[in-house]
Amino acid sequence: MGSAAEMDRRLRPPPTKGASSVARVTDDWYIACRSEALSGKKPLACTLLGIPLVLFRDGDGRAHALLDRCPHRNVPLSLGAVRDGQLECGYHGWRFSGDGACRFVPGLCGPHEARGRRVEAFATRELDGFVWVYTEADREPVREPFRFSLLDDARYTHVPYSLDLEGTMHAAIENALDVPHTAYLHGGLFRKAGGTKNRIRVVVRRYHDRVEAQYLDEPRPPGLAAKILAPSGGTVEHYDRFILPCIAQVEYKLGDDSHLLTSAAFVPVSDFETRLYSVVSFRLPLPGWLVAPVLRPVALRILKQDAEMLREQNAMVHRFGGEQYISTEADVLGSHIMRLLRNAERGEREPSDEPWVKEGELLI
Image (tube, rainbow, N blue to C red):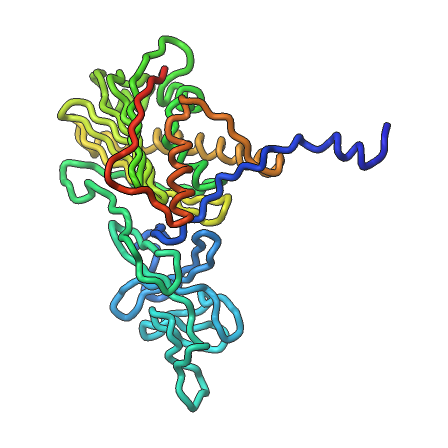
C-alpha cells in the first residue's frame, strides 16, 4: 500500500500552475456603503482590500473614513458612537475628527491633540447615493470616483441591487462581462445553449483606464430577459466595458426607443470576497413602472446563478491551492482586464493617446 506520506501525496489534488487573479489597486476609489446605510448617530464598519475601516458622519452630515483601530488600546472604533460630530471610542472615550486627529481624551489635563494619537484617515466622496473611499491613507486622491450615468435622466427607470460574491474581484468582473457562459448558466433567461449560432464581429478597444468590446450585427438574444427588453426583436448594439479599478458595464441599444445600461461596481472586500453594487437603467417603449417589477426578479435570478458558480469556482481554487486558466479568443475581455489591473497595481497605467484595437469573431 505504500507509506503514509506516499498515500497522502496520491490523495492530494494535482497542483495548479500557481496563477492568481488577486488584484490590489490601492490608489483609487471603491464603494464603502450606500448613503442610506450611514446614519448620523452610529459609526459603520466596513472592509476594503482587507483594510478595516470605520465610517461616520460629522456635525454637518459629511461622511468620513478612518482606520478602524483606536491608537490608545487597539479596539475597533466602530464599537463606539458619534458625539458632537466626532467619533468616540467605546472603550475610553477618546474622540477623533474626520481628519483622524484626536480632539479629546477624558481626564487629560494637557493638550489633547498629538501626532501619536492620530488615526489614519481616508478620503471620501458621496455621489449617486454611495459613499466612496480612496484606499490610500492620508493621501490626496489623484482622480475622482466613477459616476453612475443616466440617474438624472427622467426618461429612464433605475433598478439598484447589491450582492455579496465569493471570489476575486477579477473573477467576478470577468463573469459579468463574459458572453459565452450566458447560454449555459443562464439558458432560457438569457441566450440558449445549442441551436443556431450567429457569427458576430467583435471589436476590442483598450485604453489607459478601460477596455471595451463592441459586438456588431448581433440579433436580439433569445431568452426571457431579452424578450422583456426588446419584445419586437431586431439587431442590437451591444457593448461590454471594464473601467479601472472595479467597474463593469453592459449596454444594449435597439433603435431609438430601447436602451439598457447596467453599471456595476465590484468592491474587493478581501482577496476572495467581492461585494457588488449595481444599477440597471433602462428606457423602453413600455412604461418603466410596468417593466421594473418583471425585470428585477429575472435579473436577481441571473445574479444568483452567477454567485453560485463563482462560489463553486472559488472553492475549487482553494482546494487545488491556486488558480489555473486556459483562455481562447472567445474569452474576449478577461486578459485585458487583468492587464489593466496589473498595470494599475504598479502605478503604470498605459498612455491615453490612441486605443489598442483588435477585431475578431465570436459564435453566439
